[in-house]
Length: 182
Image (cartoon, rainbow, N blue to C red; front, side, top):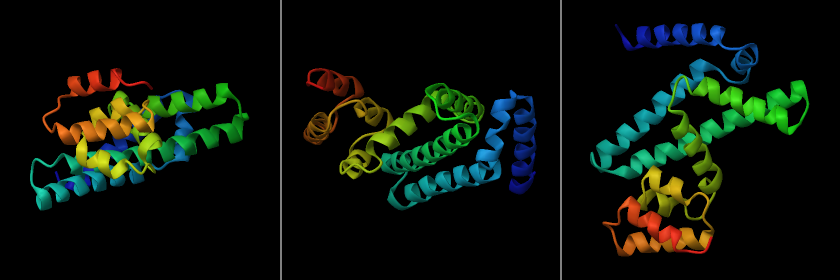
């Protein structure tokens, strides 16, 4: 089967899955286009693959940068779904939660839900942060996710600590973060 046939088959499967979801989840189809989502996912993987070819097969920066881009896409889709729901059902906390739950229910059928939520939190916290480039070069996605709830001072200290100890493990980073005032 060719790549185009595989994509067409996947699109048909996705559309069939959407028909089986509750009615409010089906409204998500209007908030974002599944074909665009698949193309974007493919382009992010292409970007990471190209970065690995240029910089080497072990570079984690390519995957971390791709996670930031993916988190931004997820966040913008979530915002669009929330805007769609609040426009239709009124702006309330319950409506926003229903919209987010519906989005996560749909997106969870394509991606790892904990990973998706983590990428959204990472993007919302560090997408425009002056520390973003240092974080991408210094840590992997899991380590950055640990820093989301930390103050800027703790993030800066963690970056400097990792630079001074390049072999710092994730557990050691967690211990370092836990010893700092938030």
